[in-house]
Image (cartoon, rainbow, N blue to C red; front, side, top):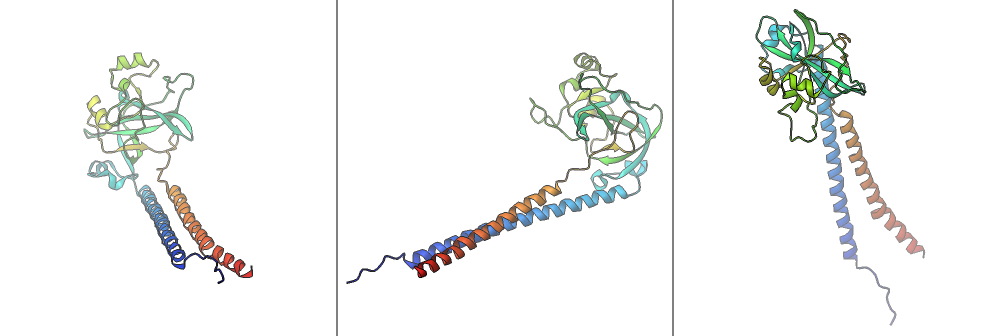
Length: 279
């Protein structure tokens, strides 16, 4: 009686094939879905960028239109033209802000609107840090009397992480909340009553100064460099390129799954079977 060679049962081989096929299909569907989701996020960010550019191209709002704004978010990044007074004693310097990759300070000064009791915080521009003396501030000019300012509606100043604090978003740095004399003693060479801070919460600043400050929005002054300040404000970081990069990675993984499946499930078994027939 001739011995028959042992063979792998076909049902087991077929079961393994269909299991791997199902897993490959699930991974392929998941990676394609994630890639498409990243593309949709990129499209949303591009639409937001288009909306920002459309707001910038609108004619400037006059003081009456600005004062009548109930929801500034609807006209974010639109230009306004205001008249009023700089409240220089309340100027604040936000530390660790960069322009063109150089560290320095954003200079913020409250602006009292002409003919009203309302005040708005204006991000006037940027000055470079003194690298030999952190507390020494470069000189800036603050015009006195009524001035006209052209600015762009912007969110309140961005909050940076403060080491050694909890959230820190609702409160200024300790040196900033101290009286002027104590602040000057802690950080000598600070000009007048201006103060260096890491962050500025508008609600807390309003309570600290007693000013009728609008807290839902700030303004970024536009125009060429002047008064010792630069105004090359960075564009909003929407991260469109990041989403395209993630989408490329997910679609690349999808293609890799297909290639591996075709090679190990179709081409490699076919080659083994052909070699076995020749042998």
